[in-house]
Length: 304
Image (cartoon, rainbow, N blue to C red; front, side):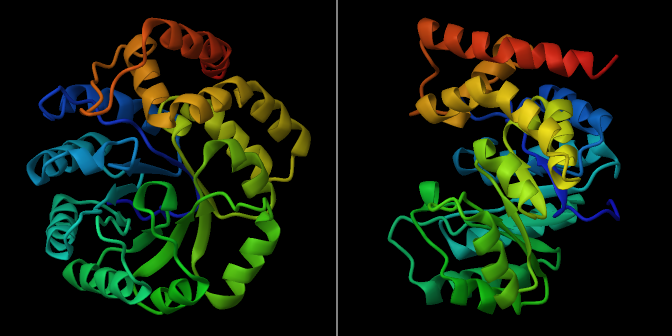
């Protein structure tokens, strides 16, 4: 276990290499994680949305966590996604992650029938009782179709082990206003996903960037994170401008399809999207690869 906070700075979320049957390739996962450790990211977000947590069995999720802990060896905190449809399943996943040596948990209110605010609260409360690791609320209405009210976030923040929230980009773009409102109501460390808004979020005072691209291009993402958090607006803008073609691919095709294309074709990581998701066609793949080539050059340059 790492003593460093997993809820500040760049939290890099790698894809989870797996075959068409959902069997995790732990060797390929280890190669991805080594790159993140070498880049000195602040934390690793294992089994996030682009880490296909929702498509893996409990057994494969546990294999991934065990392999990650063995590979990382405490060099970087590991934040593990434990979202599941049923509360008892999420409790089991939380216990598994804790027993395997994870440093923190990430919990999304996954549901089929829309949850009420009260149901979500009880779900989170149950998981925090099942495992004592610090927990980050995963607020991702794009996939869960659940929106946390600020009152619910305040209530959840009163649970001892709930320490952070991973927020979507604000619809009105007012990062500073949202951060001020959340910090008035809670003591949570407030970070953001939605990679194309990272520079503005961090420049506005966000505690963390929960980054999809950080899982593949950690040095570039880390440089952007440090520049934005240090108030170096020009450098943060330069790096964000470099990433704009890739952000356009994220918005057009969805980040998960783009990331798995890059992992397979540029980093030689064998990974298949879980059905019913389909890989991009040849023309789309070529567009993604062309958008990413300058970023690969930037990543390699940072190693020199």
